[in-house]
Length: 477
Picture (cartoon, rainbow, N blue to C red):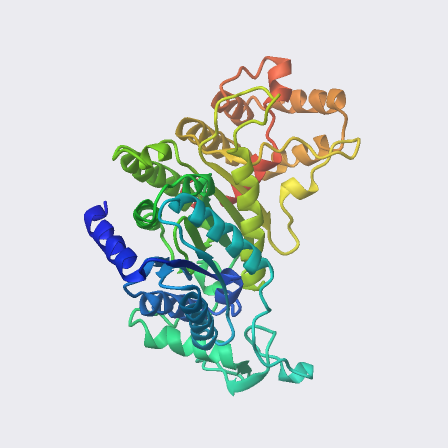
């Protein structure tokens, strides 16, 4: 997958150049997704992503151990040189991104204990990120001076939108939109806003993806060579998996700057299930192939991902949509954690998916359905993305979609009733639907007999099923 020998040679050269008392320098862009999504214009988000990629390229030098996605590690000859380089990187990033924040940290490097040195650097960098200053930018004094794109900074430039109607934008949004045009000949300026991603000008999906347990994996690496090779290999796993999934899309998408095991993008709402269904097996296949190469990658056997997605009105701020998607991603990742001591050990969940539908005037079923006692119903989210269970779930949801909407409405009424009354009402509805047998098809898809009273209640459609019905691609719905 990667040229490990070339990487080893590069690291050996960096170690030799660093001399007898080297220091490690780590750097990481703070709030990179907030920076990229500050403007909801796709061309500006692309420009911000391209700007960060250009920073990664220009920052690499002979002392670089790893660089990508606005983060990196270097081996420097002395403490003074490390601190000077840290200031140089932070200044360059702030200048090139028009106010972005680069957190940096420096620690001594002990060639006899490289793993401990790397762990020390990671911990110190986490502290520095928490203590970082806010982004730079001129703050407006009146509402009339607020940037029309990001709604935060002082507007100083005419908007470059083709449908410009007198709006003014800030320095950063203007620069990022120009960067988007300058750095790619493939930008389609017909996509002026996230609204244009949806074929029906309806809602869109914001998607956030992250690998599971990779922090622990990196903590156990024993050398700079391993860290560099692992960083490159994992980035390639996610790059290839993402590319395989994007081939399934039928509408435009907007991808954001990422690195390593992070993926962020905006999709048309009816591409979401296509993307998720393709992404999980693609990344799991790539990870398994990497694990077969032996140590230290053998510990990546079974590597999975957490996916969070929110389907919402495309006119909402891109930064807010991605924040919600990231929160759902974290919930999905929690499902994949090993059981804590004292709890029963069930099958390990490799990859998981959590999502919400939050369109204007139409909240997610997970947020609205409650039991009669006011407690939330068991929603079955996050979802285990094991291939067989995911396939069964989609098959059942397709059967549910064929039940007329008016009949599915009974589920909202059931949610307000107690179990006995709700169960009686649902069994009556299923028993009376003899003509089309669509309710019975739902239970058949669930693998249970509709004539079993207990099974009818236990396997009733839940909020997750109703939300998935909304997201079925058009040919399935």
